Length: 537
Image (cartoon, rainbow, N blue to C red):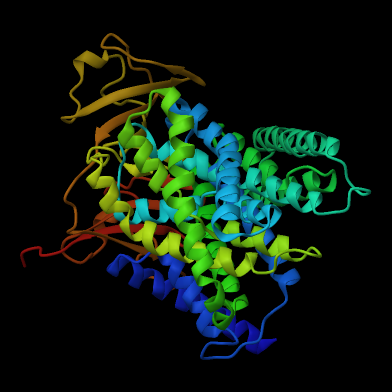
């Protein structure tokens, strides 16, 4: 057990190191994770034997749930609204068109049986959001015409449809006594219907819970959303629904509602998703035997060419042109159809069935490698070549954790008894430059003030002021006043502080005190001190 834990930690450290290296040299990081898994595998340097496809599928399926959930949760719906119709069309109808074109052309050129050719087409018919956005975010590539949001919606939502197609083809492989073609429509309706119903229901349950309950321990909100994500998949699958679709729907609804700690939840799931991506690609690299890949390389290269140069361009043109998308946008969306972890996971799902074309896993693995290596590496250059890069557009705006930097701070203070402002109107007092009284709280009521608002005793003011810039010389120190501190029972004015230092806040229990010269320091006080460098001696 201890050796497994040590190995797991080493793998995580190696993945993080490879991530830094891939950013430096422009190689897609997901490719590095696969290579790392192959190095650890039975044909690699460390010779770790792992060939249990069932365990690999179960583990990767759990990881995919978090990736699907965050694919929805992290999507900014306001940014996606202008393009969501064409994105949904690409993720549903587009998956079917891609599967059919790849299947028929593969059958024609490679003489695979029609069933095996269509199965391969279904497995590789979805695109990978993680692959696309790891490149866009690392290169900070903003795209014109809401293309980033389009890709995010399409890539995040097409995996459930590809999974559904794969499952349908596997069902058709059974004997005619076990399944009839009339059941296909029922299966599709059941998968989509149950997935949507469970996803929508759990999303609004989560929203209701956040509004009506305060979690007593910090971090329980994140644990709660982890439970919601897992439960959405499990409950939908229990009733023959599409668990991946349910997880995505839960994410996109709850992530775009005003719930507490949305930004913190986004950062948490961003980290979890990154870890899950490392895990999936490492497991897949560990699972594959490089010597088994060599015989199917020619077949995989031909299918990759069909997929990338024929099926994807035709699919995107047919779907996007009626929406009056520009040819440049269509070309870029076509090129951004990177294949990723989901395709390999679906291939593992397929080969566990009896009488299935076993090379579908190795072929899919090579297609994903080629897609990440070639399309991933060339994506920034293609985007610039098509003049689709917008230097003024921030790629982070497509995510729910993005917020424009607001260059203001808010300051709170009370008007004590006998203050010289009492009885005067706001227009008659002098405030510091670039400062505004934003809100006045009086007797529990909030007042939006104007120049004629008269000031009363015990008014609470919220002031708005511009944020200080270029404060790199300002450093913050924290001191807790314990029983033997020399500060106890002394006034601020009596303290001998280091030159260039000043106590700016005294925290006493739950109170934050802005100190004056006569403020007395007591045991247990928490002092916040700012220090300025390079003060003349």
